[in-house]
Image 1: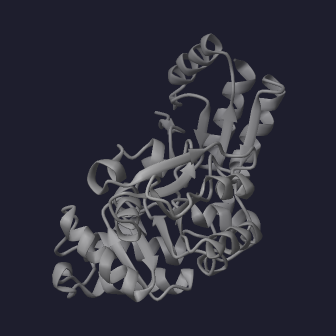
Image 2: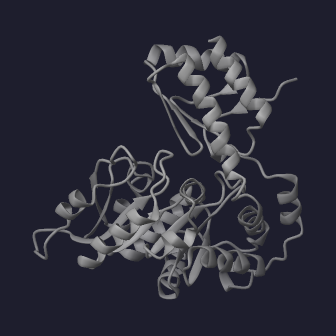
Length: 330
């Protein structure tokens, strides 16, 4: 019987057998006391990769971004972000509800960046009538689009001119690294904090890491406790994160290549409706046609949620052939 192919997101990945073995053999302790050696090792590895001093293992990317916002900002402060950024659009309004932090948004550019001249225009003057602009939130990749380090260097320079901090939602940062031929540290030197998701393309079952300076992570650790994110023998899941960082970064290129194959087939069938960046294929069809495609794909045991099709480590070369055939036959 054929397996289901799931293109809804790269969050649907399942741990490999090697990852499961690493989890089974993990040495553990009480992480709230700082005594879980595997968590400590994961945090040290993530910090080193980004060129930061320290890191914090947390339950999810949403929690990581929330803790970053709470650490950078106080009540009545403001952060600037893209209008469809995960930190604003997809995280339940947590920063506003829990931190009293005001979002100020602007549209993303076609390449997934924020126009820095428009960002500058949104920075509030030092005036009692306005919120205090404290933080610029960037995203990489954004809808699969990868920005290069030189853009981040320009954002850093702007932030420094106005004494702002910079937070990067780098849920898929290593996809951006592969696409731009860069290292995580190339982005880390431009950002005060970075959130990296372990449970998307890297294939771990759960968890994210937040990186930054020693002082920042000490404050973030307190916020993690306050929002209920202290975990005990978390080394079992941290081991999956270590395995992912050791073994699953370079293989992201395979996902990008598979996405390009699917996009090429989709362009043959749906000219002018297809875009592909990193591991994401965007197929922008009229609603009726998309629904028909979704139904037909389901009959062929291919899951899509809508126009965004996400390729990941559980999509094999044979699966790509099945998807390409299904597109051609639609």
